[in-house]
Image (spheres, rainbow, N blue to C red):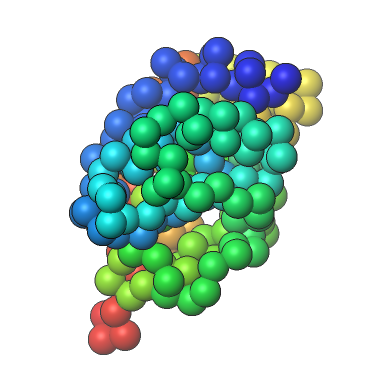
Length: 206
Ligand SMILES: C[S@@+](CC[C@H](N)C(=O)[O-])C[C@H]1O[C@@H](n2cnc3c(N)ncnc32)[C@H](O)[C@@H]1O
């Protein structure tokens, strides 16, 4: 059910966020990249186009229902052999250290409790090679809060809608996780501010 509603409501709304995330990650042909919390797999499919025949995209999600929907979407594309979907947790990623060239985590970090967000960032840093890129996209903590974000936060607290996510200071969190924050963009999603941040995994000398 959730996966159907997600595509119905979020497909168009998320388009600008996804485009910004794709432009920032910008994988080269042949690269191996991860879409962490892939949901219904739309970003993973777009990444599959970019990495080409010699590349590989991994999509990981904790929800079997989302993953089933992602599998259906991927199977309808001509590039399904480049996309591997795995059930898993972004806080304990099923990949070896430094085994990926890049990763994107879009609209997931804000859903985790604070210690989960830090654990996820540490895991992304672990699995992406030194010099590789990580793109983070999440509900932005803008100060002072704009009208829509304030309204959203009031609704969230009244109805205890923790599942909707909490605003994050993405650059600060990325820096605390030892990532080098490079370029950030701001987009709207249903009139809420979304930050999209390109980070680099430091090389040992950085
Ligand atoms: C709001 S959707 C975002 C989907 C997609 N990344 C996008 O940008 O449209 C959040 C997704 O994160 C997944 N998720 C939530 N917690 C997770 C975790 N700990 N590990 C992996 N996936 C998780 C959910 O199952 C859901 O598919």
